[in-house]
Figure 1 (cartoon, rainbow, N blue to C red):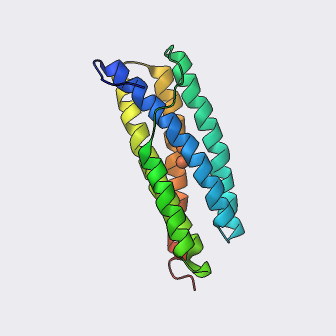
Figure 2: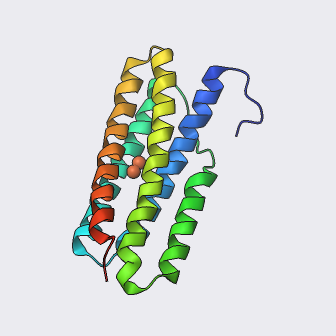
Figure 3: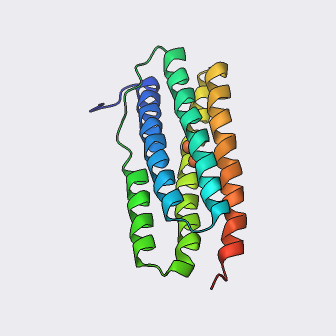
Length: 161
Ligand SMILES: [Fe+2]
Ligand SMILES: [Fe+2]
């Protein structure tokens, strides 16, 4: 773990490690949300994105090897906090609201992932690492697509009774 950053490369390496933790946390959260969700369609959506998340972890590992870095995990307090808040809200919600809560919780994580990838992509572009940019863009596209699907579901469940 870094104690102090002196170069943009060190900062990038930290962000990469943090993104790996973020994806590990997301994978766990998606499993919990799939279990909690009532709608079979929503369960399938979470399961599908869990599969994509496994691919995203592989892409991040490929980024590390492309740059000759070890794929060390750096703690991601944000995703842990989002997951904790999501499960606390699910526990407090009536059965009719669980899907709506699960969708909002997942949306929070997706938007954090989008921000993390946008920062990584900007840095990789600045470094002229085109292969790394391609791998990160593949992950970003999946997060954006999932986010759009979740927004559609949020509308659908808004008036669920
Ligand atoms: Fe992800
Ligand atoms: Fe995601």
